[in-house]
Length: 394
Image (cartoon, rainbow, N blue to C red; front, side):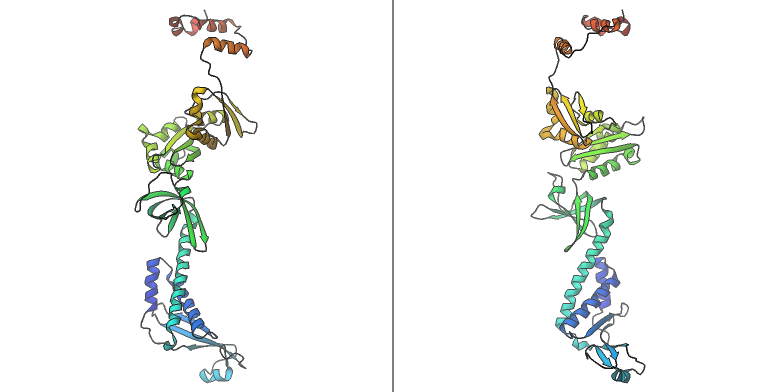
């Protein structure tokens, strides 16, 4: 076939570069689509092959027929006698190719080829996007906000494709604007009939974990370990930390000088409040720390460690519960223990305390040292304030 007016190879090369598609894969898709279109619309009973030279741009459409002794299907076969007239070296079982005249490429065939090629190109692009991000699940990326839809979804541009931020993965109350850049946690990449779906999140606790590692060197190098995170995006989070170096205060390291480190983290999360607490291997102490800033009393942990009963005085109860139950809810999530808060009467009067002790069967101090310490409570305020261990032993 003569050189076509349009150099398909150059055109496909430009498309491949513009769409970030493998050039040879695109040429192969073009050849297949054109063969299918020509077979369907021009010569449906024949076997068609298409070849496009990527260098010269020469396009060949060929009818392929098998050499047989006796022809049973004239569209697919050619007799040995006829074949020998065309090529003396041909043998039974071989295939012969017959070029198709350029004029036979009808407009409908070329249009169908174009439609099929478009579909193939979309599939290739989708595969490129899926392959680009399938192994990046669990990473935090910087993305550009592109648009939103009427369902409340936001779409962000990652580079090779778009990711969706559904309402449940957004920070409540955060105002996103097209063109702004935000950090997102790549939660899931999956294939669908309509192409790959990339699910992004700004509400996931792992985004907070990433930001802490970025802003706090002691966390990044492993001196301070993040043991657990409980988060209610846009409102409040609790982070339990532990130091592997006795000279490093884990809470101070996370907060930073005048709170500069934790403020850098919260600034990325729309000023979400982040409480940093000390992790403790003792479940009771860990629960006590998790319920801060409330001060709680006796903590009883169940035998399986899944439930805990915590006594709280009336003045601390609302603080322990938190607004809308948020404080106790986050503490339970952080410690992975179901926490039952139980109000206990506050004892502020000394006589009431003594009466309570008698009712509980607490014996009065019997040793002389203990008795002296007990008697010291009833000295005047000046003598009590200046009492020393030696004074108590007199």
